[in-house]
Image 1 (spheres, rainbow, N blue to C red):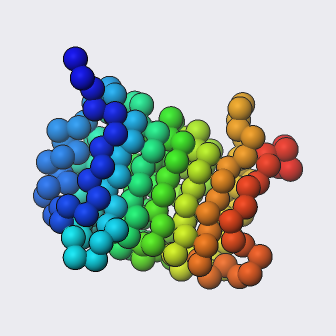
Image 2 (spheres, rainbow, N blue to C red):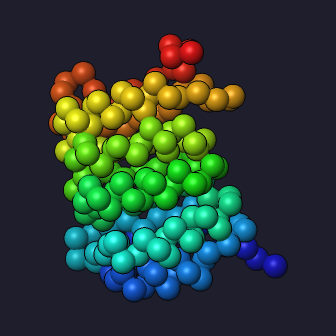
Length: 178
């Protein structure tokens, strides 16, 4: 029987109720490893809001093989980003999270430490968010918690995040923090 492994739903003009239905139907997915609900085109906006969270939580809790989550340009405000990160803490197989080009500030990264310590994350893209000094503080705290077998480092993409000229795109070897 064919299985759903990757779901690409970018630029589908999805409304919150559409996401709620989708996530309810995908809950307990035993095969899905990748989902992309991004906005790449300005005229076909997906709208992910707080209304989507209960179904998103159920989806993440039941999707035991989920490894790649892409949520680019969804205009995720701080509170919503914190809730998404809190939900993804429950996704131990998460390898890659791309939340670039959202409306998030450094405050949104309060939950990042838990995501990094409780998942298998190897790639994190926070580009084009206004993280500033507060974001740098949360990011530094999260980096200090990078531990675990087989984790040689995490690729952080931080382009245009208002962190200053020393933060761009780099890899952090874990042995520096062991």
